[in-house]
Length: 120
Length: 104
Image 1 (cartoon, rainbow over the protein chains, first blue to last red):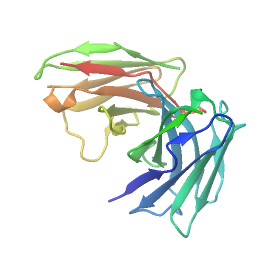
Image 2: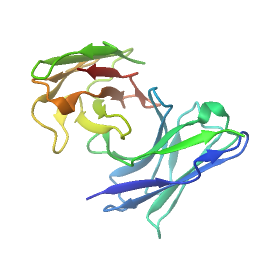
Image 3: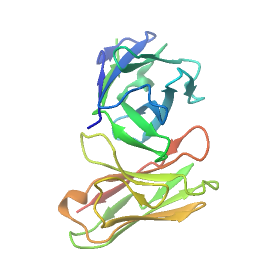
Image 4: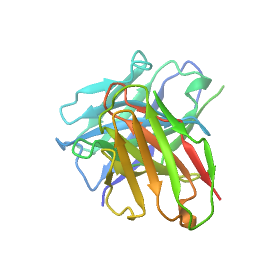
């Protein structure tokens, strides 16, 4: 059974960098048929796709966030990470990691999500 | 842009629910539906417009192609009352609809 779990600080100061990690179990982030994705949701609002990283380390980011986003992976720990720089209150959201199935054309596995508040 | 309607749908258990998602441009069948309950992550229901995900009950069905899509729940169970999102992956960046709330 594939499981994904986000971890990281729940409070980040404005202008600082938000850093989250997603630990995957039951699947390998080395998989060639999945992209490993970050999605966020402002409470009570819709979902925003942030970007993905795939087995080769290649990344693709939402243009609206591209200048501030960076993703990386640690194959030895089977985890991948998100960094979002120069955060503001508008970045306050629940952050989800998810598996993007290239054969299902959908996000088929999600983490539980972690709430990140940007505040001084 | 994905536009979902209605924003809120009030129904009773046993009734049929029909939710709509309209895309601003052709997304072929690269459209998925998710269910989200309060305090939980979204759950994949339907991919490629009409393919039920593993473990999803047969009362959930999806249809459509191009710009107009529908999620139908044939006979509502109490656990179906939630928010439903559509999602397109035909074009970058991937986007989601704003959600439809299905309430009792």
